[in-house]
Amino acid sequence: MNKIIIFLLRVIATIVPARKKIIFQSFPDLTGNSKKMYDLCIQNKLYLQYELIWFVSEGQDISSLKERYAHTSFIEMKNTVTNKIKRNIEQLQAKYLLFDNGFLLKLNKRTTSFYLQHGTPLKDVKDIYQEDFQCDYVISATDYTDHLYLTHIDNNNKKALGFPRNDDLFSADQSQKDYVASIFEGFDQQSKLVVWLPTLRHDVSGRNDLVDEQDSFSVVNIDFIEKLNAFLKDNNTFILIKPHPIQDLTKFNDVNTSNIKVILDTDLFQQQLELHHLLGCSDALITDYSSIYFDYLLLNKPVAFTHGDKGNYKLGFLYDNLDELLAGAIINTNEQFFQFLISIVDDVDDYAEQRAKVNKLFNTYQDGKATERVYNFILSK
Image (cartoon, rainbow, N blue to C red; front, side):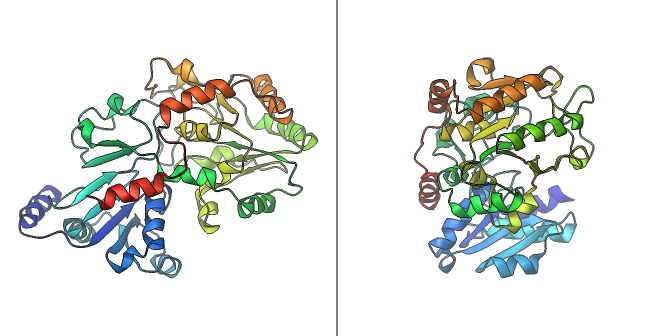
């Protein structure tokens, strides 16, 4: 049924001109690279020339979104025939499609579609990008990786302009620090902030990215948290843990302590903040197999990798020389976890030179102006 509808719409598209509509999509809703492009459209009053439309997840409070975001239409992505037809009609008429996580089908040859991506992959994602994943242009931070997983898209259509979301790394201000202080009692100008971003292992639908069941934290477990929190209190250091957007959160239930807090995308959305705002005012990053590592290189701040379950990770990795690209401490034990934190407290950084070298490979531009570059490129098409 859906294929028939799409076929009919494409036939109609041969005589329907693209209208002045821009459709945005992201996951989570209104975040990341798509949101940065939308914000600049609003700032430049592009709504006077184009209709701005967001496709958002089913269940979103559309009335609240309209109150917060003027000059914008919102359409829920429901799994019904009538809703799909409604969205397809909008896609049929759109001048531009901008998406960074998921895929918006191009139905009109007069439409120009841009895959903004949601990070430079570290994990092996080749199986995700098959021949049916099509777009006119792919925006990336570097051309070092695109040939590894976007092989069916012409190289001329891959543009290493930088990820717009990374501009937020350079714009940290007092408001973000005030937000952190509102989470942690005792957080002050001398405090150290470490952001911990474990990648997806178990999602809410039951998907498991580990060969064998293991703790979502990879290295530590809940029993370790009390000891960790005591160390943090003694050293005026705080850890913010931000799980993956679709991570099963049951393993995070007992993590919150005085110096360790879990924040979710919903928390950031309520504060009108992005994760990269918090990264910009952090002192260090702990991650594992997340693409956020390549973004964080722009700050040239310390990074550590929890790889206690590396051999148990199903997806594998995109790079044969992965060990050479990870410019930071590898954490496989609780003791190594503490050693990394001690280096942060003592301002010891043994990887700055290596990070700078890797950064040149994975971030062609390092100027915090990606949003403007991508915006100008899109409107030139």
